[in-house]
Image 1 (cartoon, rainbow, N blue to C red):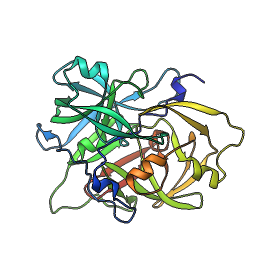
Image 2: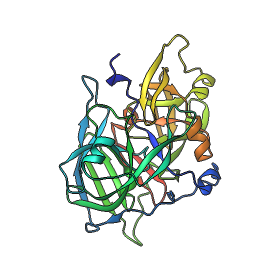
Image 3: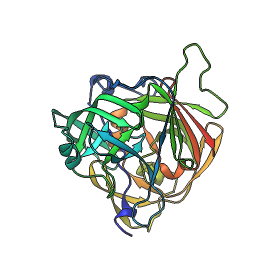
Image 4: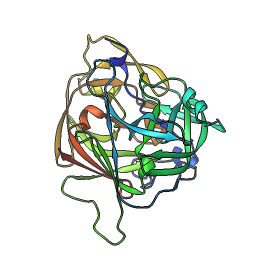
Length: 318
């Protein structure tokens, strides 16, 4: 298996370990993203935006994500992965240095597959432009590992949380829709009410026979199940070899799993491309047992509408 096939995806939850975050529980997770950092400033008008997406196809592998072309501090466009499993803008160290994003502090990174947290430098992008859409003062994590070749960094969907966020992977469009105060909400039959904590969206789900939470992670190249859950549900393949994976915190170990049935709201799905990985540190940080990640393979054939205001996701077939 090539190195490209072994990229799990960044799936790095970059966040400060605040007292509020450490005390969160499944019943008491805040319904608003919190991080202890100021939100970026919207520079462009509050209106509809249609931003083009480019498929991310590492080596000869299948499509594993979607890219946005982003200008950092007025520089040349770079290719950043659209990732609902990350909290902050993330740049490779050489890209950050090229465009003048300097480390100002450090934060703790909680990553898939790790049983400890890592310190990463944190800076501030003075301005980012994605076509006509622009933000100022964007918190930026600076990393030296965990990104596949061809990626310069990651754009978290939480950056667009002032809008309803519509992602159409097949149509290669990210659409940002302004909220209309006093108007209709995005709620529909296919909407799933979840919880958001520190910018990460959790959905209640039934995985095989087990109830719990799944993280929505468009930046993960594979679906993932927590190793103890995979063993409990007998999804872990006994003789499957351990795989070396790249995640946000660097190399981690994973193991191939059998396809898994999952029910989310009214939607029944079969997850393939499934790996068993440690989600222990993520669960501890968020104060809730995380059963697994809905990665790009589970979402690429759906139109996704993310409503951070209501902690809600709508999955519609394309």
